[in-house]
Image (tube, rainbow, N blue to C red; front, side):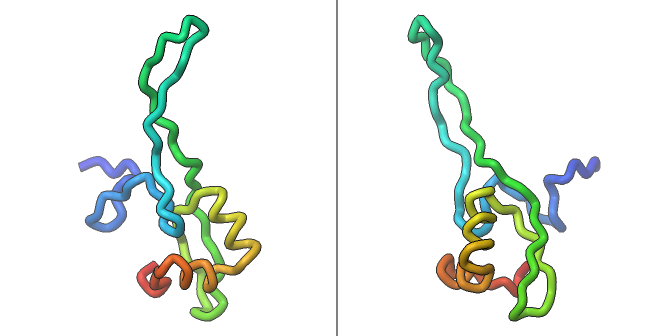
Length: 90
């Protein structure tokens, strides 16, 4: 079986922000003649290693760029607590 980066352990990873839950949005691409074709607006996800001070270690998360900005402003522990996420899983 070929490993193309989508498999993490034995689980299939979805394109979803692990902190905010953001995911793709269905939309229309509208041409000049107003002809509409379906398209998918993907969220801008990045794999990011973030220092978790309370756990005294690095945590690797798949985050949206908006979540990265919010973590830089509020801190990882505060954002994880607000989202109800246990950082010991990562």
